[in-house]
Amino acid sequence: MAESKKIFVVVDPSHSKHIALERAIKTAQLAEQPPVVKVFVAVDADAVDTRAVNNNLFRDQSWFSAEIRTPLENAGVEYSLEVCWSSEWQESIARAAKPFHPDLIYLPVHERGSSTRLFFTESKWKLLKNAECPVALIQPGAKEKREIILAAVNFQATKDEQIKLNQSIIGAGERLAGYYGAELHIVNAYLDSMHYPDRGRLAKESGVPPERIHVEEGYTNEAVAALAKRLGADLVIIGTLNQKGLTATRRGNTAERVISALDQDVVVVNY
Image (cartoon, rainbow, N blue to C red; front, side, top):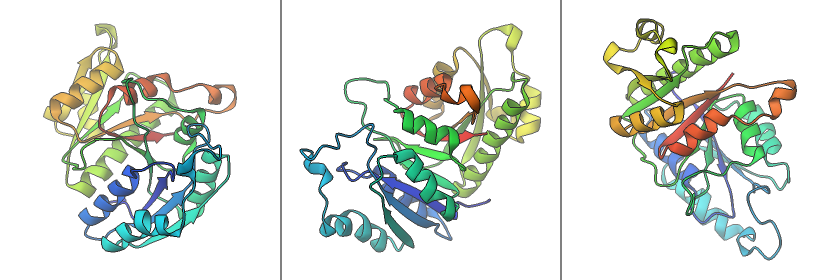
C-alpha cells in the first residue's frame, strides 16, 4: 500500500474541535490521489458525560453542515457520513469500519488538562489492540506536517508474535514515509548492555540507512520521547499485541507510557 486510500475518521460530537477530521482533510490535500474519507460520529460514553444536562450532546442539522460537510466539501474530499448512538463505542467503531476496509483509523485524543499523562479508557485500549488496521491517535497541538517519521521496535524480542509485530511496525513506517515523502527513522531502546540490540540486523531488516538507526539506552517511553524531540519527529509509530484469552484484558503498559510521553501524533500497529 503506497497510499492511504481509505481513512476512517472518528468524530466526537461533544467536542468543539475536531482534530482527527482536520488531520484527515490535511492528509487528503497532500495526496496526488486523495483518499476516500468515512466520518463516523459517535460519543465515547466512558469518557463523556452522556446525561441530558450536557448541552454539547445536542447537535442539529446546521452543526453537521458547518462542522463536517462544509470543511470536507470545501477541500474537495470524497466522503461518507455515519452516525451511531450505541453506548458500545469501541464495538460500534469496529463494526462500522469493517465493511469500509480502511487503511487507517483516525482517533482524536482528549486534552490532557493539568496532567501530562493521557487518560485512556478501556474502550480505547480495546480499539487499539483489536483494530484490523493501524490507528492514528491525533493529539491536540501536534504538528500537521509529516517530514520525519520515527518507528519504535523491539529487536530483542524472541517470541514469534513480537518478531512479526516488529515487521508490521517497519512496514507501516515504510508505507507512511513513502506516502508523505518523509524520512523514516528506526529506534530500539534497551536497558543494559546484556540486551543491546543488533544495529546491523536492524539496518538490514528495515532497509533504513545506518545513520537513521537509533539504539537508545533507557526505558522505552523515555528513550523514544527524547529521540522524537531531538529529531523533531512529526509522527511516531509504535506497536501493541492483539492478545487473546486472559491476556486480552491487560492494558498495554509500555504502549501507554510511550503515548503519554509524546506530543506527536502516534500510529499504533497491532499484531
